[in-house]
Length: 579
Image (cartoon, rainbow, N blue to C red; front, side, top):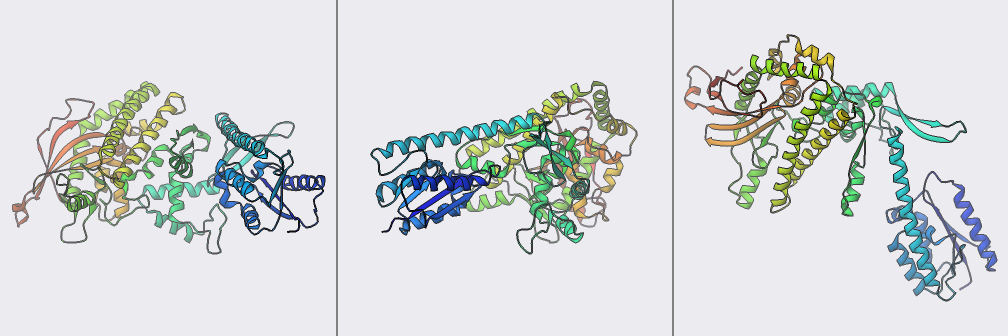
């Protein structure tokens, strides 16, 4: 075969100069002339701004073409500036090593002295490969160290999210020292409206449809001719971004977690407060990202109770039966497990949706009695006078409670006979709640968070909390709006099972602070809930034309309520009126 040369050049980062390719090609041509090679008909292959590690191999079209030309015997001499230009990955380097050893018709020359026709070239190339791999590791370490340093100094390191734009800062000599995000008011208004609509119970699909109908432009350039539209997934990603509540999270992207899981690594997320970038309140952000409000992150559902209740056995979300004379709630996960795997201990009972509605109304009335509300207002007065110190104590207690719940779910996952996707999802949600609470605690300890005095003072005034009850199951409200209100008032509604066909038990956590916030149109100051157990009983004889409601609700016991002695109605039956 007539002697013919091929050149390969690559640089790995968009920040490097594009002339790097030209410089490498020029040095390879000079190298060929030094070895008296024919440089008139040279094949040139190159890849720009693509890493030489394994994850970049599929993107390197020039490298793929080089290997195809190699297999087709289209050249006899390969010229590269350095062996690391071909690859920095150990496995790919070993495969190239094997090619050079088994296909002696191809000679490789590098500008730093490698010549595969010389004795012991394998040793020199092997050492160079090890050095290049270590250089790659050192570079990654320095890059990560530098990025974390920029974050600690208050700069940003990523492409701005929707609602922000990038502003670079330079020193007196014109050298770039960092980048910051600034708020774009036109886009920030869109972000706030998305959060408000989600807080009112709108589904992701409905919000995306609204944005498209209004012609709101997306941030990213459309990749296809029919692109550029808001999609439900884009709305969900926007809502879940913690930057809108003033926090930048490092090491928490889906891509990074996926890569870490494949390699068996565990990533520790780090949070950096950015209060100057906050677009919505932390309470509103948490409300819009509360997974208990819907069965899915996109969610809606046509019933006010859809996605609100959880199973006391497996912690999965209860589903509603099909439309019939009496819609019921049940645990689909337990039902399938009992039928398919004969797990008789599973919770497969059903409870009527209309009964649950009455239970929630009566539970809200109980929690909003004067004694409960006065006790809660007393704690607000203490917070107003105690400031952040009292908030710190409450935040630590709440973190401990959430960590206990996460630990219980972890034990359930470990003891499960097989993978349980729903249980895994519940554990992921619990982990996110623990992470958010830790962030809140860190902000309090750093002095970033402060007592919302205006909200507390508004809630301490005489407000008519009955307004909240009037909105429950109002025929004029949409199911989405009702569900949004219920999701705030009842952070946790657990169906624990039945004593008999007509007697059901529930554990309910009620957020008194959310009720006062709704009644006073202010932000939620205290998100901690108060837990109680309730009995829901149905009397069939009353449903046959007799007066009175067939449903009755009884308070069973007192759980996690800090002001002992306030509950004097233990065991007392509360009348339930069907509105």
